[in-house]
Amino acid sequence: EIPTTASTPSITVFSPNGREKWKIGKTYAIKYQINNPPSKNLENWKISTFVDCSDWDVGWGDTAIESHYLQNDKGLIEWTIPSNITTANQCKAKIELMDITSGGMYSSVVVYRDSSDAVFSIVATENQSF
Image (cartoon, rainbow, N blue to C red; front, top):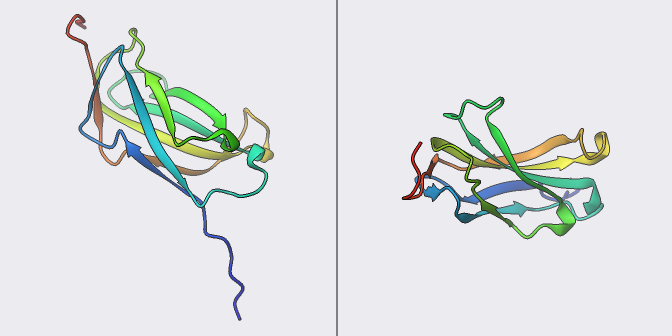
């Protein structure tokens, strides 16, 4: 008989998931779900949230939003889009689940990740121009 094992963890990003128009200066929820999360040693797992806009001319293109330990996860991150950010039309939210036992808080190994299924936009408010 083949022994059963726990299901493999995975991540699903729900929002933004494509075609949204998020305004600079406003607050939005990045929503996701960790499916089959590790059940032990939650302090050894960190969740990091990024927004990646391929039409930004910024280093690697990722803007880090927040990192927290799995034991403190609520499945959403509130993000107020900074007023100094530029508009973009090719954005995706990315969520990564990292094992930090392999090197500590700042040299973690990404084990699972997901991103928006389609791109969303970051747009100027009525009072802004770029």
